[in-house]
Image: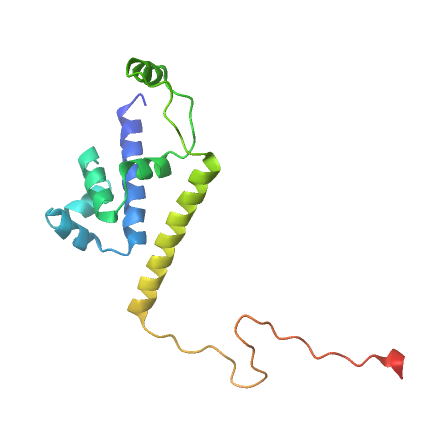
Amino acid sequence: MDSDATVSEESRRLAELLSQLVRLSGRSVRSIEQELGTGSSGLGKVLKGNIRLLVDHIVAILGVLGMTPGQFFQLAYPNKERLHPLVSALRKAQGVDREPEPEEAELEARTQRVLVKMMSDFVRQQDEKAGPKPSAKPASGPEEEEGVPLKPPEEPDDSES
């Protein structure tokens, strides 16, 4: 990244991703603010990009959501890129040739499971808040068993008469 505008744009993108995760968690911004001990509307300003996003913000918010920074950044940057020469040099200096990485399909499956669970928890919480829904079955006519489509009546076979 080579300009302040690009850094700000990327920071806003990460803040929006955090905001989406907060919404999917079913938690209110206010409840997370209380848990973090931040002032009123402070987190909202961070998530809207009005306050510069810091690593401290990311780590604290993820902690409340039960996510690790690694999980968040894998979500934010899913494409595997070639290692930067400085990363390679640092790993070599640390005596680490290559960090073991999970298979791409395994990572994708785990990510999908986490997102599906988060979305289903969110939907369940929304349904609990909304209360019972009225039945939408037709007033008259044949009843359809749940999940089983009605079949049209079979026509008599004229060839056997």
